[in-house]
Image (cartoon, rainbow over all chains, first blue to last red; front, top):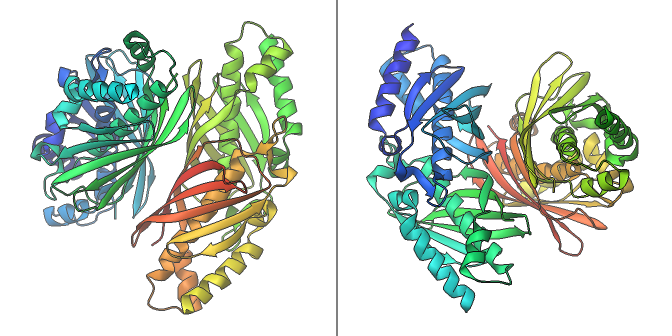
Length: 151
Length: 151
Length: 151
Length: 151
């Protein structure tokens, strides 16, 4: 319960206080130690290829990286005994992406998009997440694998 | 000579006609069949982590993907006998990122950044490039490997 | 029906005619255009770390690569109209691994192991598969993503 | 000096006490905190594709993983103040591959092969190395990137 409140507050902070996420319109819509979800809608400024009107590969990578980072953050918090704001902030300051693989499966077309992440390795030092990007029609646009420093 | 002119025209088109590249300020500064170079300067909107003032991982991935895509494009053109605008456009329409791995080595701090790409596999169907991101002080911020569809 | 027979014959050929697969004891136990399965049992010669008695990372990579290659091969055959032995052999001669990512999630301990692959991108030139390695207790030892040349 | 002696002893132990390395004939020929080198010679049992007589992708991955693991091990030792055998063994017991990407650039043909690794990130918890595989004629067969747990 308390943790869900922490996740809500963090989601709100990250949705409003992260310049690049706001620039792209990336919004955390689910935040959990098992799964996370990022939503965003089509905007012309996200176009990578004007002839084909598809998302830039960097937009896809940014959404997948954020989804993976969110579920990794939840795994950090899940392992804390002390849930004071100071301890949470100190622990999250160690969070960072070590590496990210993105597989571009289909052209990034759609009106709205959802990036989801599932944790597949949760350790005290390193976490690994698998991510997917779908559009509003359920087309599977991209897959991703991210390794995150968590401790 | 003629090819260099084509590269110049393509660089100009991609620097001014790609919305997401313009949003991030990504500029092609070198375009060649062996190497390419992308430049961009720090802007607060590129911040991923406001507490630490570092680049969002999606910015790094976008710059590396563009650098790799440019050198892959040059490899497509290098294999063409017919250099008519129609043939070039048709050939480049097949260009697409298949997968991209980004290794985040150091925090993305700096005033200006250069992403470079070298071709390491140049085939008729698939090309592979290795990329690096450095800041103006020469700090090595990220490494990348990208596989591109070219035919 | 006919394709299933082809898959059976190919599995038999690859199980008995591929020296490195035989050296490791890798056996194709499922061969399909959607999924494939590779089985192998513990042998002391597969040890990478003698102090901990766990599989060498190269064994894991070899099993995942074979699983992905098998499902990619089935996707090549699935796209053929002409199922003559000559055409099949000619088409499969183009099969090759472009790149492979392996995520080592848990120590490779167990008595027997199963590597499974699912196709996530099936094109005329490139296929992408996701793989998993489990032991006989269902422990999830590794994840993989492979990109294959298929045309 | 003392460290070079430790590297020599470790190389000897790994060359003779690791069953899978011996099965493949992988031999550590250079062991340093900046670079490492693994040598092996062609053997028919390493064949992945009998029609084309080329190395199995798992052999390439195993050689690259070992090269990266060796240079990561040297980076662990480089950070130790106490070089007692107990401390070295305890520290190396934490070494493990987190993930490995292999890019297969050319068919694995040749009489002898050298895998080299360079460290590109050396931290107290995670190290990253880049690897290359060449044959005796200098043909560049594969590239790799490995992330290793080191603390």
